[in-house]
Image (cartoon, rainbow, N blue to C red; front, side, top):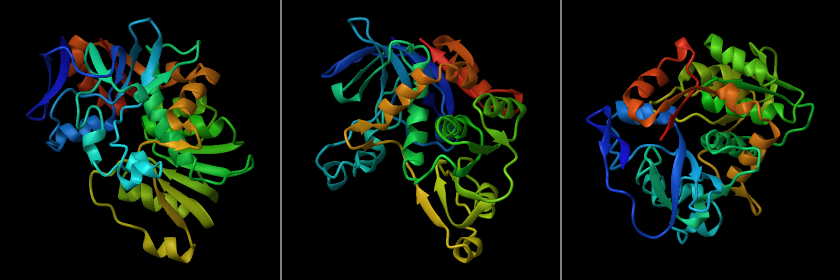
Length: 312
């Protein structure tokens, strides 16, 4: 089958063996390109196989599903207490990072990784379940009221996903965005632009020193900063503001569950409730054969790219 792999910091379409072994076979319908994919390629992160952790597809019986792209060990202390996003095996449990991912015609995953989709959510769009689940997980760290003011710094796919989660139940959400397409998408999701004043909480989704400093400035005394970005370089902590304002800083990674409900399931239901999400966040759809071009487009935020999706 065809698959997308990283070869010496470049993306190539290769012929790969069809997946075998235990698990559920998923015929991939959509695989999103994440900013983390771009950073891993640029930094020479050792990816042993096929790329892609944002994915959805169909089962043998025709059911459309999304995939929670983790296979935690299930027996370390973190897994036992339910925090499988912190499994001690680290990146090895992530599809598209430590294992073959979804930028291919097929993938095999454990039954636990399957996320049933509501009837009005297509697998062609449901690669968005993964970044939406990242946002759900971070927002769940906050104790918010309908009247809470929340700002989002950074309007890539995760920042806009956070805006989508927040605007679903808050009256005031403002997004700091760099590019026109991002600003337009934020407004379509019901968010304001150019955060100003004080906020109860700020989600930092840009992953750099300037964004973290802006988050600290915008937080009210006693407020909360959630680090929702993936940090690929060392950043400076605005320690003076954090301490003087008695801010709390929470780190958020991947997704988990609250009680019996997984963040990915909440994300799938959010897509059902807000059918405009796919058209707002997915800016490009391209065939698997065009993977190198698709990755090049995904880097062009200033040209309007938000979420670029490969369709095997």
